[in-house]
Image 1: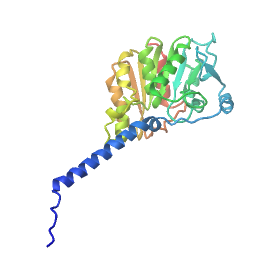
Image 2: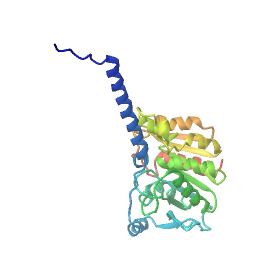
Image 3: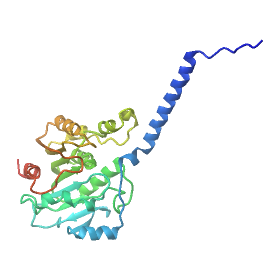
Length: 283
């Protein structure tokens, strides 16, 4: 006579399923944690000779900080007695290196209020031909070295990722930064990453945080915002959340129908003219 073995209780089967699901979820979290810098930073590398040729098209020259490290491309003579001793420092977004970001300087070089000011297109470690690898603490350290190597006050411009770096600089060197322009900004990286990975515990996983909303509480100067209305990478509401958190003298421009990478940089655009006037004219 065959005796059937008792079947496993349903709760035991469900327990194994739940345990397997939890284990899989934890492994995904661990994997995302381990590759988060690769997901965040997308540096493009170019050799130095090609970049020097590209920089010649906008009369840019290599700029070295006080420690002798290459840190970007200077347009104009930072020692020239003809300008007002103010410098525009531009911190670009992800992927393409600083030498390809000359478009960010054109509105300033075409405006009578700022046309004589030298412009530094700052380069991140690991981008272009600059040595190193991108990482929040390292990028901020090198950016501060560049700031400390510039004589006189600075008008700071950040684009996308660069808005997080700019917020660090404004917080740590508030007396040197006379104004701040944030283009497609985010309030902090935790909020932004949560939009793209809604099912993950981002606040526990993330190490690269760029907490602009907290940092800018320590900056008393003017802040201008350019927010892309249809931004799919950093949704407009995130930039507006940062704007609403500040008590500074501030203005914002919501660029109609613009996505993250399609804000027009033509000098005649009204938002450029008004933003430069807001930041460059004495209060």
